[in-house]
Image (tube, rainbow, N blue to C red):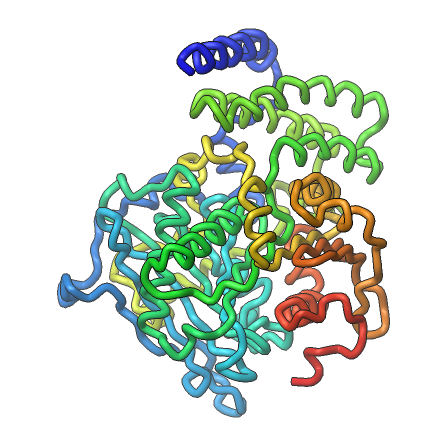
Length: 499
């Protein structure tokens, strides 16, 4: 065994030696700290250097024995509305993680506008290191932010049919914090254990929801978080650890799950979408063999190969972007204006208001970190790991899996996602691959193309980029509602209109 590891180390060193000379001369290379800041800047958000370890704790009145500090909130002030937040059970709170040094995880919970018996759905935003409030206010939450920073009801918020839970994670993201830098997570073991602990306390605090169907959802880097959390919950249920969580399935939107397959798809997608020419395609593809080798080693030989894989493979993406120019890599139909691909700055302005912070119960002096560069960099050695490996056993045990992707996203494109889903080995693989595509219909029009067999479904969503719920809010609501009801492949009627 020692000889095997030594051989792998030699291969890694050889790859690094061959690659380093070209990398240091390659202006397309983007190192972790630079990529984190570039990603955050493109969203018009403010990068924070050390958000995981602010020197602040919860209020001194907090008892050491209290794990959960929660309050009911009313963020919307429309007194004429028949759907007032207090009557709907809107909550915000902190959970003190029991297996951390001083980590406190922030969340928001919105009771379904339809029925408390609806499924409970947790949403995880990716990054890594971006707050789930991004999705809450711009994608699928109960509210949208008006230009005057007031909140308006979202007609297609997922809370219309689901009990919706948003969590700021990993620690250092959003309003979650610690006073101890040892709580900064570096892999999916730490991330999933923290989230499992959070869910245990949440359902203990809210036993009325403990028997509801439970689903895990999210997008982008949550393609890592979600399978890891699903496996952790399933393991906890099997081993009778704590409260049973009624896990029924998970859905990943435009996620990064199997990097080896997905990075190969970058050039194929870019060529297919006429973003690059054939000569550029062939030139950039020369990078992939070393990327592939480093990615394979990442799963066996530890942090050095994982970091090398990150650097090598992201050269593929940055090389494409050098050709593409100011195209929005989250939605290639659009151009970025300067460095900004989207303007989410109103969220930061809204959450910076003292009245909002007080309503949410945020400790005085604690900054909101929309996207943390510290968390992003801490997860670099996790980036290139393959999280598809744990999914087949979940499928075999009847856990439903939905992979969906907007067709105009480049960074986590539908082609790469489709390929890893079809390549995944499980008992239904042949039948899934052989299953004919069918139309996903909303309002009498094709809103996407669906492939489904057994517990596995893949949906390419039309006219959407990276953030499907933002680009196609009604279609995404229909998708989640039908899927949780076991009716994703039924094109009529419109289930959300029954509510």
